[in-house]
Structure formats: structure tokens, C-alpha cells
Image (cartoon, rainbow over the protein chains, first blue to last red):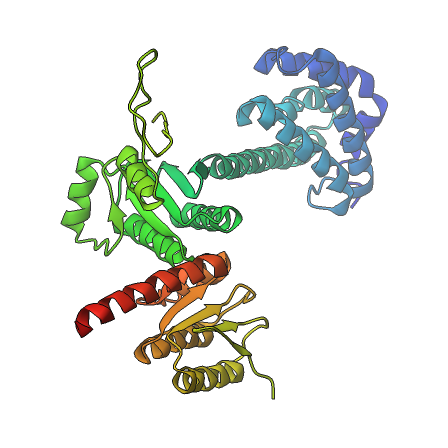
Length: 302
Length: 129
């Protein structure tokens, strides 16, 4: 089996320096140096590492890219692709890293089998197959790197988008922004319920001003959250219902049951204060001797 | 036999569930509580489930039933201290315990019971007049 890729392995062993230099020229010529993203030194280091692990792999495992001898090189490519995905390379540019090695290798194979066209064709075919596999592998790894990035961003977005705010002692607010799907509702619900336990607040205002559309599923999720809060002994007020959403809710025949609904967060807050036995009154203007009130003035900017 | 203690404090009955409920325990509690309400003429029952970490559909229904039964026996009932996980589970199971009064903790629960009892007295006075 090791006779396979013999020419290739000999080229890699004997001519590594010149090959590396040619390859670097190819790389910079085909994609152009993205010097802003990767310095020449880094590129050279990556290329040298790739060549030396390719040499080891071909010597031990022939030209079968799936063989265990290729495990180190596959790992190297994976790291490289994911790094480049993060740096903002396109998949084509990343795959070209491998594909651009073809020309220098083919040139050397042609030199080597000058008098034996059949051997040349075979060797070229082997080398093409191997480099294609490796090139496609970078593509796969690149995709994987991107997917991981997207998943991480999604998670970060979930964390960002569900803050629970204490509006007043015993009054929590949950401003919802963006579409509510099942996964998000789950997190929103857990956050809210945990905060209710932590703060002992008997009132929570769920504000849906930032929710673009409310369909039956979203309404169902909201109702579940309200029901769960009620089970724990906290009441919920639904606020920030825009005119279109009010229309949709009625058209869809969603029954909001005995949930208190208010058009704006301010209205909901007023209800919450009233329930807590508090009221807001204007502070007497400066310099004016005011009427004396028994209750201390509570002022709050909305 | 293992059973959940029911404490009498003035006109209140206190049930604090300190262990994880299993089916037999719930059934025993149901019998005990209804008997105590009748024998001691209790008019207010507080059930503290803050130590309950997991519920299944059976225990969920038992909680609802026990609360409903004490309401039938004319005792104001409040379930306090339900944990978020338990609340979510009950909602997902479709057991929103309609008609059961709830409160965040024992203190809130006592306040709810007190106000309900005084309301009762007022309406009773009104009726008597």
C-alpha cells in the first residue's frame, strides 16, 4: 500500500523547502494576501506545519485520507479552518489553502516522471484525490466552525434578551423583545419565576411592546408563564399591547382569561402601585409653601 | 406509618410538606386533613409546599384535590411557596390549579388568610343583621 504515493512522499521529503516557497507564492497569488487578517509569518508557519504533517502521513498511510495516519493532519486542518472562520475568511479562501498546493506538486511530479507518462498520470491522480479530500475537509471544518459561532451567538442573545427588572419594591418588570419561541419562553419563564422567588415580589409586569407579532403559540406561551407565576403566588399584568396585536389576539380567538392587560407599561405600573398601597403625587414646586399631606410624596420618573 | 403533620395554630391549620411526596403519603394527607378540618372546625388552611422539589401528574392532582376539598369544607385554603420548577411542571401538565389561592411564602399566605377571614366575618355580620 505504501507504494501508493511513493513519488509524492519522495517529493515531499527531498524538496520540502522549494516546495514550500512555491506554494506560498501560489497562495498569495490566488487569494491575495489577507495581510490584515494573517501575517506572512503565520501563513508560512501554517504551511510548513501542514507540509511536514502531510509528509509524515503519506509515508505512513499512503494516499488514503481516511487512514489513521492522517489524523494529525486532519486535526491541524480543522483548527486552521476554524481559526480562519473566526477571522472572517470565506470557505473558498480556506479551501484554496490546500488546493493551491496542487500546482507546485504537479510540476514536480511532471519533472520526476518525465519519461513515463503512465506513471505520471497515476501519480497525478493520486495526488489530486488526496488534496481534494483534504480541501473538502477544510470546507467541512469551516462550516462546523461557523455553526459553532452561530450557536454561541444564539445563546448569548438569549442571555441578553431576558432581563428581569425591579421597578419598585415588590414589583418586577419583564420587558420582552423579539419573537417568542418555545426555547426562549422557557428561559424567560424560568428567569421570571426565579426572580420572583429571590425578591419575594408578588407582582410582575410582562411588557410585550417589543414583541413583533403575537400568534396563538406566543399567546399560549405567555398564558403559561402567567399561570406558573400565579401558582407560585404572584400576579402578572400584561402590558404594551399594541393596537394591531390587540386585533390579532381577538381575531385569533385567543382567550386571555383573567389576566390583567394594560395598553402601556405606565398603566400597568400604576395598577401595581395601587395594589401595593402606594401612590405618586407631584412634589410641591420649589419656594412654594405646600399643603401638608399625611403621606410622604413618592416620585418616580417613568 | 409515615405521615405529614398538621399543626393547629389558633384558627389556622398548617400543613408543611417537608419531604418529597409519594402517592400513599398524599392519600394519607388527604384523609387526615379533611378529618382535622371537620373535627376542629378550622376555617383556614395553609399548605406549605416550599420543600417539594418534584411533582408528577398524580401529586399535582392531589394538591389540587386537597385544596379543593378544604374549600368545600368551608375552609379558606392557600398553597404557599411553590418552586418555579414545580410551577412550570404543573402548567405543562395542564394542571393550573384553578380556584386555588396561592402565595409566595408563609407570611404572605397568612396575610391572605387573615384578610379573607375578616371579610367572611364582615359578610356574616351583614347577613345576620
